[in-house]
Length: 379
Image 1 (cartoon, rainbow, N blue to C red):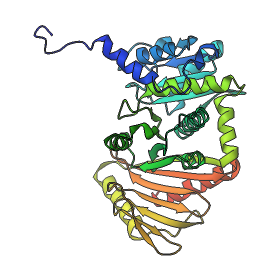
Image 2: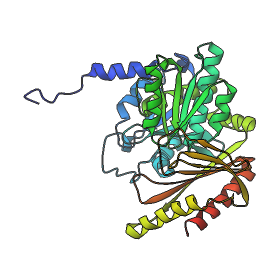
Image 3: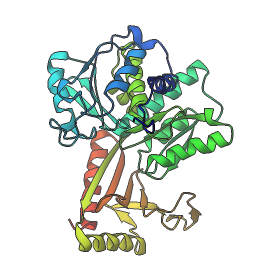
Image 4: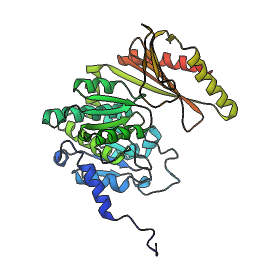
């Protein structure tokens, strides 16, 4: 510090960042008289100041911060697993909600690049999934910008190959190109770079992944919980003025396109023997591709390691134009899917099961897919 080799980041840089985030707003000024009430927790992490600052900027003043999770603390004493994907991360917020009675609960993860939400409902507060929030955000941005006449020609949204196909239906409705990329937000950021290189970065609307990462605008190349928190609150305020909650709007989307249900299954295999077993599972599936899963016919198999998609109905093959990755994806006859991939960071195989239909039929099919996955994994 004394030699000037290390210096504090100047507040002006923070303000430039917040300016860039605020510029992504779809309806500037809308929140100021919406009366939206929010509980926010940074989960003892980095989101506390920037998230509160951006909410104040857009006019959301009724924000209650969970006091025991407000300050940074790497020991996470009130939340051993500070992951906004799980209900445990909301326990302190939910207790506080009993007295505050907010419209919305926000929880950003410790490095503030992912955000989870819970929405007030008839029986308390309902947690919404990353697939649902991403679909809501895409629908909100595309519908509002189309109505305003600010939607660019040939707009682009991006999500990953394990993200719900509901996004594809919404994009199609608004004439938006939806690009699918491998898991990892760097691949979404890469799309922005390509558009920018072509002088077309204004075509990018948003990117998201099922694991609670979102980005609106082109100021960053990674997921950002600050802009996601802003956009979530903006759309909650927008719909509150219409007498609707985010759950109400999600139900409307499901009624229009079908109830898309998703389930992530994790199978852990420890040690050297576990690694050999995982390799054997992937080699077995690759060498002897199933023609049906849970009694449903497999329509196509995409092997991202071999970069080929095989249509099992007509026997044709097509190239997958993505980087090679050890992923196998099966499309099923009733609109469902079954994707298998080893984790890149843990000794696990992940299975992403998806079904569409009525709530009851889709959930029943997910149960059947889970049984099939258990059998494949020897569980």
